[in-house]
Image (cartoon, rainbow, N blue to C red; front, side, top):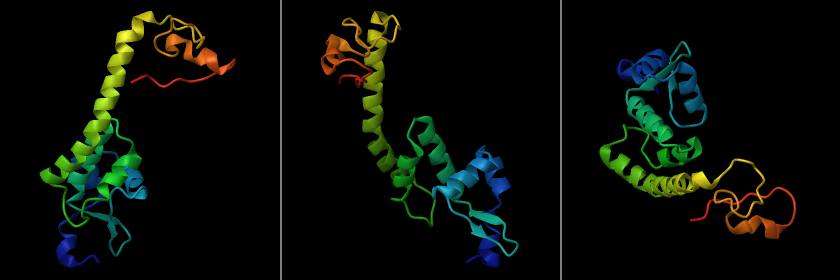
Length: 152
């Protein structure tokens, strides 16, 4: 419920956008996905608690790391709605994401190291292709397009 006391502590969508550097449309999108929440005042205008600024910052950092919004949403569900995420909250979330990031980094390094063997022809059956068909594994699956994940 929006009371006169906490209304003064709340921010308009424009204020959140200005302070967070995130477009109003992005804030509306985040809200539609359940990543942030607002209340409506008597004039049916959105009002956000100040804690939303920290939540938006967390969302933007996670996005920059390449974490999909669906995973960010699942992570944010672990946090209480009535306060800003803390350093301890971030530690828990970042430890969860660290394993995934490490795996992606390893895959990117593997791709980088094998890039010189690729001629970019897209044939997907060339025996020497170290990126898409190492050891001609796809040739065993018969003709047609097949995709091979990057080996671990």
